[in-house]
View 1 (cartoon, helix red, strand yellow):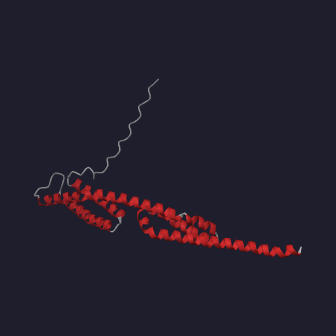
View 2 (cartoon, one colour):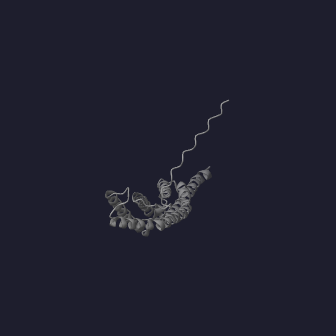
View 3 (cartoon, rainbow, N blue to C red):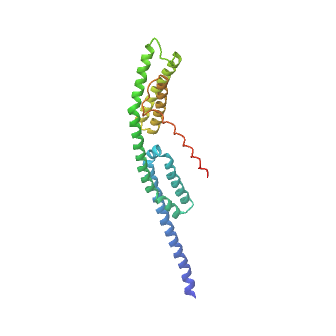
Length: 216
């Protein structure tokens, strides 16, 4: 009996020590996993946010969840959440690179045609400004409006090029689209032929009505 009474406290102490040891190991592992996740994310976050911001939030939320679990002492849950984050980050880096390439291609296509459109508009405006008689359908007021539209488009095109040079491809493309729309508007007002690539897509034709069912 004395032997059992003697060993019972020792066994409880051993169990407590093992639990503390395991808890400490899990805590250390969770700490390391969270640190690795944060370092991996911080190294590429700016680039990912720039091109796929909607997907970036998921990583921020995961890191936040891991930290919250850690603070509550849920080290296993913190570790489970944090350990997968570097893999997610790697996938987002690839997705961001693909999006960047897609935007760069779109910019190349846009910048290949817009300058020619603006130059054609300027040339036409110069001719019309020196003409004694304006073409049918174009009066002085419309001509002045076209000049203002061209100047606004030319200014925004410079802004678009500056955005592209600064690496802001989304902003550059948004500005470029505005320039294209304005250029098409001005060309139409001046009676100029709009390049096929820049013309608005035609509205889809309505689906034909179904044929009436034959009468029996």
